Amino acid sequence: GESVGLHLPTLSVQEGDNSIINCAYSNSASDYFIWYKQESGKGPQFIIDIRSNMDKRQGQRVTVLLNKTVKHLSLQIAATQPGDSAVYFCAENIGGTSYGKLTFGQGTILTVHP
Amino acid sequence: DAGVTQSPTHLIKTRGQQVTLRCSPKSGHDTVSWYQQALGQGPQFIFQYYEEEERQRGNFPDRFSGHQFPNYSSELNVNALLLGDSALYLCASSQRGVEETQYFGPGTRLLVL
Image (cartoon, rainbow over all chains, first blue to last red):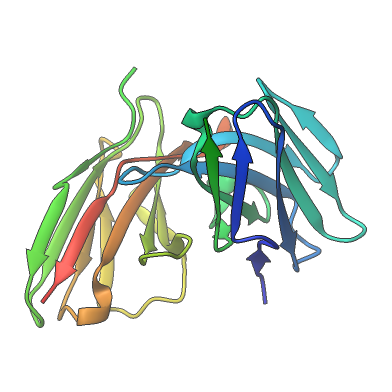
């Protein structure tokens, strides 16, 4: 069945460092991947997405890398700030999110120390 | 531009009761999805509504039902509440065929005693 999982449940970094959050997925049919940030008491906030026809996509201070060969997704955050502290989820979908469900992983807790 | 809104923010019910949660999608969005997020877990898909019909359903019992109104807002109903239904219920909206990203609301925290 479909599943998305994370290698590291917690990540602790110093302010200014770069952070890398990893995610593995098992469904080779997945063609759309999204990273969400969830702060305590709030709903998931969209960060960046990538389609399976791409292997890299950059946003503001964030980069998502997709390796379809090993079914691996990563989120890189440059110059991590205390405000980046949150739980980060990767999610996958088949056929585009408007047409169905997102399958989420367990999440990685990112803690940024000043 | 209004984002996704949900009501109420918190709710306490007892076992066996019924609950209705409400969601207003982001302006311009026509598709609403509902998720259940247990403490310490990722959200799990319940179902998705488009054009007032349930289009896809996750692995949830029939006690979970929903509705979408002509203005695209949606309700999630849960009957015969169980202790295990205690969770954060999230609504996400998107625009089919145009903006596929799902944007989430703040959620409704349900506690079943």
